[in-house]
Length: 465
Ligand code: HEC
Ligand code: HEC
Ligand code: HEC
Ligand code: HEC
Image 1: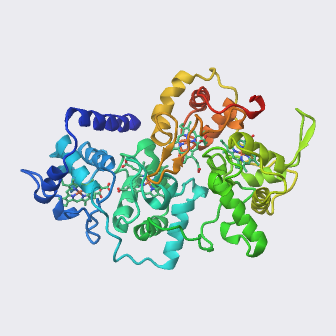
Image 2 (image 1 turned 90 degrees about the vertical axis):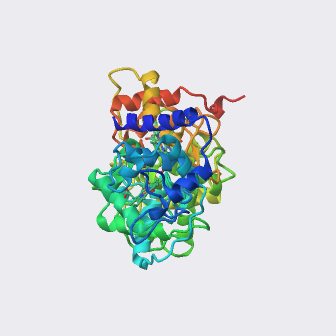
Image 3 (image 1 turned 135 degrees about the horizontal axis):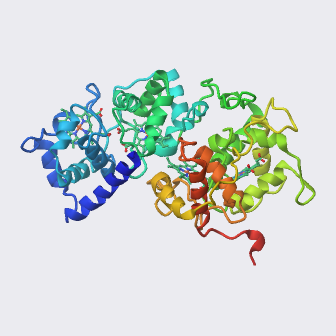
């Protein structure tokens, strides 16, 4: 039901914009913010004229937030999907046009750098780990995967978090957990908030408050944080355990290639996808074709062609088809780095074994044949918010992909394993919607996989002439 409400809010925004038959008026917005209107308190008394908010009182900074997001939040207060004793009465008196005007005003303001927040180094380390890597042992993705690199925000659905006040951020996480805020698409934030400890919520909020959007991300500090527990049988080592020296450097390079393939292996990648897009948590997550389970399963004998496949050949296949690119040679640095990373991830695992958590959790043949028509509906309600209504992914303001495309020229080609409806259904059932894997029924996963599969994509290079 909630998704319907969210979709409706999106529609209303579009319809509201049409009906008002004029663009949002910045100066009208400014006047309302400064002076209020009959029955409406001036927003400036709490948020400031320029929307810088108030740290001490927990009034959020609105400057520079996306106007569509601000509008959506005002609608949420008005229609009770976000409960707050202060904002609800304010929003109830605002017309749609007034909402658009104030949203445009606050969006046009520049957020000031954070002041007065001084988290300890330990807090920053834990907060940064959660923001960048998540807590996958409890199925919490990194905040930056949805909120954009450095938490700068993506479009109108994923608000900027960087530079927001820590006490306000923490309140929101608690409100989701307690059900006072229910306006997030697909319950994404409710699921995340319910899986974080209080300590983790505080740490990530404080880190986000002081996070600088601009500038290159510093290297992740090598401290021990949460233990990664995926299967009862095997735990890949912690990132902080990557050794120093030339082997460690090679492992780190492999991890970087896995994380951002188009940038780090430019010569071999032919689309915008990275290995981690289909092998979640940088190849660590059980049930997402993890690399520690793959590493020990090769070399493998293939019945189909009576040949032994090595791990290098398997990697080459993903470059050729999943990446729609060129296979890196066996002795290339790219290959050495990736194999070193996988070798390191699999340290302590039994060799020659089929490990629990390998591949994607298998699905049985569905009772009804996969139906792309009902798949289209599932796509619209459960996937489009991130992958875009046309499946072409979503980019951030700098133009880089935050949510990858699912078909079209920048996607995997039709020789790829993900192009097999069964594998795609298995991947989606276990891992999508992102952070809410297991939400769809098996039949829904089959249907949406058939829908994704029904679109054009680059041809299989073995069949190109
Ligand atoms: C009396 C103080 C007060 C006034 C006046 C006020 N606000 Fe707020 N506003 C708040 C508080 C407190 C919150 C945080 C609510 C929560 O915790 O859910 C908030 C939250 C918001 C948010 C959500 C921000 C986000 O990041 O999700 C928006 C948007 C907003 N206010 C807009 C407005 C507008 C527009 C006005 C004027 C028409 C206004 N506010 C007037 C106190 C105020
Ligand atoms: C799977 C995608 C996803 C991930 C991962 C994610 N978020 Fe969100 N988050 C959202 C969406 C969508 C919203 C907007 C909800 C709405 O429409 O009000 C949101 C909103 C928020 C807000 C409200 C901001 C405001 O101005 O009121 C906070 C706080 C937040 N997220 C914190 C986090 C933290 C902390 C993490 C990492 C632990 C995280 N999010 C990870 C999807 C995500
Ligand atoms: C909250 C945002 C979100 C939603 C909703 C979502 N995805 Fe994804 N999806 C992602 C992200 C992020 C990745 C890449 C994962 C990574 O890099 O960690 C991804 C990766 C994928 C991939 C593999 C990479 C590619 O581009 O082919 C497929 C296939 C996919 N999603 C399908 C779906 C389907 C089908 C749905 C709807 C049932 C869905 N997703 C819903 C965020 C989302
Ligand atoms: C579009 C999605 C996608 C992308 C991108 C992708 N892969 Fe794969 N990969 C798959 C699928 C699907 C499988 C088959 C999983 C199965 O058989 O259960 C697979 C299998 C593998 C395997 C064998 C796993 C096993 O347990 O047998 C390895 C190794 C691998 N990929 C490495 C990579 C590397 C390295 C990259 C980046 C260069 C990459 N993949 C990019 C989808 C992808």
